Length: 420
Image (cartoon, rainbow, N blue to C red; front, side):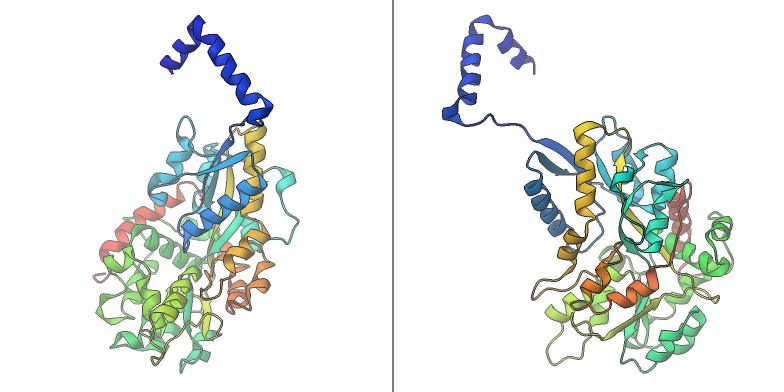
């Protein structure tokens, strides 16, 4: 910058600079090149093939908005502080950020995001009911819903106890059906390791136990005073698969293991988010031999799902919603660009395109917040209507410091799996 200033302060170079500017602007050089505006966006990173999604939105958005260049921001350790770091940086590192609603109350309380303008909000009924509710705090909408997720229990439709599993609403019923498995093939696979994973599992248990968010939060406790019934669930799930597979650092860090094993029929059931079905289908296409009995053929309706029951009370589905938010104090062209991006990235056309598998590929099985997409996707991914039925009226919870409180509890629970 100092060198550049010296050039412009040197009188005998002014004519040269002026000539260059005039030449670039003259007809023989075409129109003056206008530097594009940069829009910095951070999308939710934990989805199958996120690089492909980022590339497509970049191409689509920049083609329709030639004056804007997208710049993707790496959130680092999303749940370990990365999301908040980019929003609190000065100057800010991000303009649009995709927020798991576990953080939403904190971001609103800290004045890090602005409400979504009325003109961007979609008509009532556009989104799943749980997604609409999750984005609203104090009667203001702070994010445009994009993804919904929650813990499902998946099993084969040809399982000998498929009818009983379909009707199960309590963890004790799952234990009765699976019995005391002595091999992996007879059991249930689930990732029950890690601070965030176990913290969210614990909150799901409290929702089952107490029925409503207010009571679940009231009994959340702290790592030294946890609910006596809810703390037992991780070990109950651990015991449903021999060999310690459900509490394994390698499989937790490389989370495709459980789904790929399920594709090989190495378990009767699995607990996971719906998007893990992508790895079931991918393994069926690329890892299951043609003469091997498998599960997960993309267009074949051979998998059933229920909301994963985690306690011995009637199950209440807990959902997490990812919403697209505006950083605080955006104005002018920058805000206009940000709202245009949110509209495109959460729009029906873009999400239908990324959720419809190409020939030879498999469905991502991400759950869109837009209700209409489930019917559109059913032909290529037949489990979508069932997943919608389970998740659409689920419960979403946010609260002050909820993410950190759940991680602290999860860290404590992680120490006691296998040794209650």
